[in-house]
Amino acid sequence: MYVPVATSATPRGGVPTDSGDSVVTLDQVPRWNDTDQSLGFETPFSGSYFPDPLASPSGADGGDGSESVSRFPVDHEVNSKVYLWRGNPWNLEVDAVINSTNESMDEAHSSPGLHAAAGPGLAEECAVLGGCRTGMAKVTSGYDLPARRIIHTVGPKYAVKYHTAAENALSHCYRSCLELLVENGLQSIAMGCIYTEAKNYPREPAAHVAIRTVRRFLEKQKDNITAVVFCTVSTTDTEIYKRLLPLYFPRDKHEEQVALSKLPADVGDENGETIIDERKIRIKPLPKKSVSRPPELLVDPLVSDVGMAHRNSSYLDSFLDPAFMSMIKDPDQRRLEQWEKTAEAQRGWNCAKLLGYGDLGGPPLSAAEEYSLHSRYLSKANSLNLSEIAEMKIVYRGGVDSEGHPVMVVVGAHFLLRCLDLERFVLHVVKEFEPIIQKPFTIVYFHSAASLQMQPDLGWMRRLQQILGRKHQSNLHAIYVLHPTFGLKAAIFALQLFIDNVVWKKVVYVDRLLQLFKYVPREQLTIPDFVFQLSVMFHMMSSIFVFMMLLCTMFHFQISMYCF
Image 1: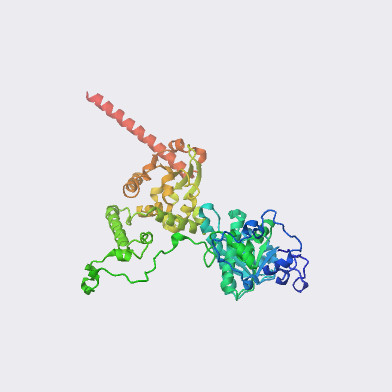
Image 2: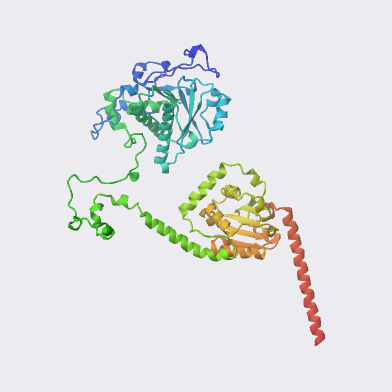
């Protein structure tokens, strides 16, 4: 059924590729229709690992008879465009080859051997394409390959819990590649397996998705495509494709009949994607016979009385599935609820605004809204270079506290509001906090000399807390504040009062570094020099204050004794 083509085959024009491998033309690769005549060739796989379903006794009778119409009937025209070939796809002389890559389209995560065969120009072009999303595809020049174009696509990560989503994303990978092929006026394509071991996608389910997606696409575009070559580079993949191709591309009525009992229960829709019943719009068809309406509705009411007319809702309900209608909420009702939340929140925040704490208006976000907001900021932060913010050392990682929780250090004096891009700073904060907020963590805030700088208002602090999300709030162990001032304590009290009473109740004030070291060991912190200097100064001032109080007490005692 399958033949590996020797690399000594006649190359294009007799000239090997730059990598030293000979170019293989489609004439040297057997069509799927012709594989029966190729059984005596080299490497006749016996199917020792995977039994051939077409040779299985259970399939000889065509199944249990529950389904007599094949979902993939014999189509010799479509079969003539399908090839199965074991070898390096970069040696094939076709219009396009597929590269399975990652979102960044970098060389390290591309299909093995592609960049070495194509040359350095490929990496340079990929670098300016702006990446590629999962399930999508982008096209570049073929450079030193025999192929004219390279179509890059990003396969999904696989998890059993999200099996259906992964299937549909993988199907979209193949379909996007084939659509780009047609859009660019190309007619032949070689495709390897668009999945990687690192993404944990099982081989056989991936092959099912690939073959059925190609079959559905060829049924619609067979006039625009001349060849689709399934390329395999391992014995395991080759055996899988040998077993599955007859199910989706039967070459005769016998294979078509046997496939009825061998195909999976779900072979997708007209595009090969998995059908999800919960996403269907379930509206029952209108009855063929006319349904009599209630007598009071036979006479049309006046236009002015339309809104007051009584209607029997059961008449419409008889045509609509309640499971579908229950998903819909009246838009006017949604707007009213949103306005009421906003108005209620604004009434509560007016007091804070009058006290000079900033605009705290707006209703609280739901858990889903906070998650979506955090995800957007994290995605943007990971795509940007924020090194200039990191160099300011406003927020940076410390060690662990006395209980083993990771520590994040915040230096208030480094927060130069006049020359700081707050939006980029927020992105930096989200990026720095993300690795540690998955478990309980601690924040150490050095307020030393911070009162000399302008600070953001509480409205900005509230927005930052929403962006960090609820996981940050629930896993926060404590906030240790060194050298607090009266103004800071008032601001934190306002945060407790107007924003979040739970999170800001975790603030612990410490006046000296020695006190802080009881909670976080000295060797676990990188402390700026001016914090040490201010700590020494505060200690001296405190000592002088105590000494003066002691002198005053003694002086008062002596005067009292003199009077007596």
